[in-house]
Image (cartoon, rainbow, N blue to C red; front, side):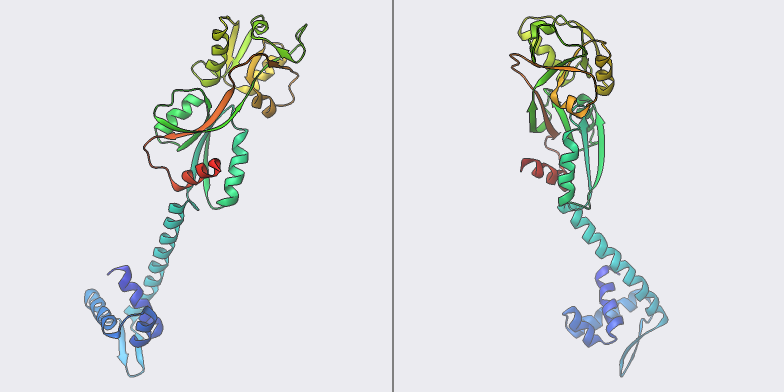
Length: 289
């Protein structure tokens, strides 16, 4: 017994005539009659009583009809849902976001939700290197990360580039709105994130290119805590401009950095040569547009 036979039987039970059921199913009468006979033989029970006015369901026929309608409905719902998941109109978008890049995510997800209102979300926040690991382990499909990082195993779509800013709790004597890397070397720095991540290396590279040695007071992986410490006078910091927009309310003096040749970049990454769900593909298509 298969779904096709059940759908044939549903039509026969509802139309109560082979001719009417055949017309509804766009079939010839003889093959449909044979399908009913085969179904009765397979189950070993009469499903209909044949008389001059048409067909009447037996008790067994009524039971089969009740279950057949449920089964056919479930199959139809399954077909629709699977198709919607395949098209990306349903399913789950699993995405990670770096702690310094979450400003982008609400805007992007809002636009995506407007186009795909039935998609659900799995959102993870972590450091960029951890997000790379999660994508490699297929715990998430996409990740918004801070660059630069080693990305040989990943494909990447660049999102935006923004400048770095120097921030401290006190105004720097003799400085206006701009400070140089030479001047920054006189201020102990509390840097964002931990060693080995994109922004950390980006900052150190700026000093290295100039053959300067900054005073590194320490590192802090929690941006809110970092800015609280800096605003209290516990060192100064260099952060992407977005961090200051995302965490307002701190008593900080913020400076542009003169002659900065590098900026903080962010991008969306995914595993190379690995199937992406349609929801993830649609999200990338939205970003490309």
